[in-house]
Image 1 (cartoon, one colour):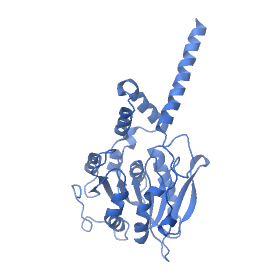
Image 2: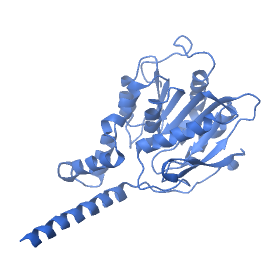
Image 3: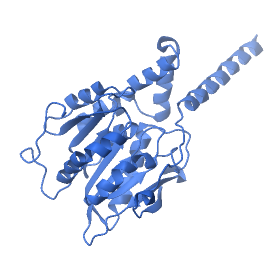
Image 4: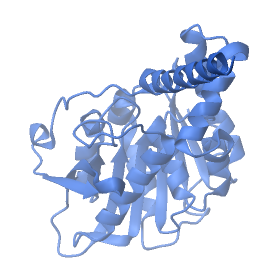
Length: 305
């Protein structure tokens, strides 16, 4: 009888380990190759490797502004399953506006090192590594830093900003309000019933990443920010509905958060090409030597059309 009980216990443990491995494998981001480089845009860049935890490194392109005086810098972070090349539409306009730009590959993405998993908190850690590196560059004023992120990268940018008092501005492209909602959508599409298995998957994911969804959710982060935020969201986004940006907008501090509604879906490329002058103007005012005041930067308490 003891032998039978031992076999049952071991079988349950083996199944649990296998289930956990399957969960992580199912949630793993695809690794895509870079489609273009800054050189394809006629810009000279430096390929660098940034050290992070566990002796891992991140790949990045750094495009400094050649100038005698240090100027503003911006870290640009892609979304889940993407890479730095998909954020290249923002590079030339930012560079022309006087920003030194660091385009990052998050861990497990692009040419950055692999890891057992990545997550929104790890995206935020990668952004912080980029900010630390950028702040040490001769062409960059460490008091004039900003972040632009897309999707998970946008949520990570907001989370990063909660612990970076040196950050002057965040541009959030297509951020979701709460990761639990994204997970439940994913589970439904995978035909995994929430009441039977889904709750366990969500619980296990939170255990693995070492954070509760409620604590890292963008709708929680945006309430703790002290820097200006521009939310940019497509009106036809089918992955993350525009209503998420409205919820984030309402949760943020009045006079600190703007919301720009743009045509298109979750992919930010078209929005970047069309609306970058507005975004660059927002960044330039945020990182200017003159303090950002409500009297100089009109803040709209309804989404901009």
